[in-house]
Length: 346
Image (tube, rainbow, N blue to C red; front, side):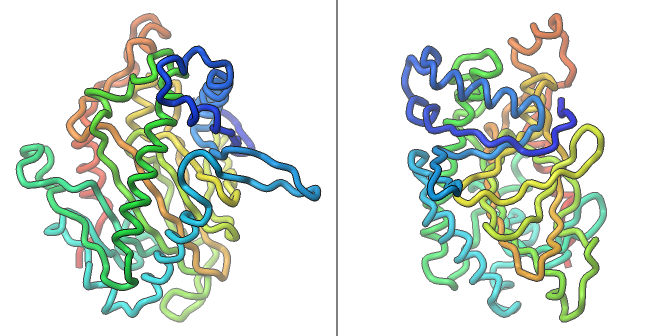
């Protein structure tokens, strides 16, 4: 349940990450402090930044990422190689063109992705965990396929797959903290819920206001329309110098989520909203790039098991006298329904 928040909270998760696999993590005072902060952020905004340490130096705040295994250097390398791909000629980029036949994996041009019926002003490479033929029966048929990585820039596949592995592990550990926040055990979102998590990743380029088809673009052109995310937890790695992400609060105001160098912006997805029985909100957000600069963001979506039937946790049913505010939903069905309405094929 989102509130009238006016800014996005910043959470130091270093102690949680250090103890995430400790059998006694739920007894650690430092971990419990992080858990309280996560609970507050998820309840009030559904969005938060994660960092590992705040250090004051020469009257300036420096954000240092030390413990989560994803260095500032790698965050930038991932954005830089994505930018180099988008700088290639259109004919080169379409060598990995997304189609239904690729399981909706690959490159999509500006305006090909749609949100609520309106073309989005971005280009992207969409990636999903590989789904082999028959892996999930009819449920997964639409998503069957493997990722089509570009040959240019060199080492694209190696770098991005390393990044996916690290993001998966980071998200798993954050979810262990969120599990405690919801009154469960640290492993609440493992096993049959998310022990074999599906993942989605979008590498996105948002042209600046004068860079679409050589003409000026009106400042209200939207890079990505208002939407919620589909799964459990999103990790956003965005350019450090362009303010474009906006999050809607309960009053309907659009609150800026400006870049904090070295951080991830995290937000709640639809499946976690159901697990929390509505306590946590999958908050509407959008992207408007009013800068003249081209903006890159790399978004990793950590999901449940593909075929998991999601329903409120028992701890959250108890919170409201045993009632379910939401019907159960199968994650794979939810994803496929969204994918089939978000893409216009030429």
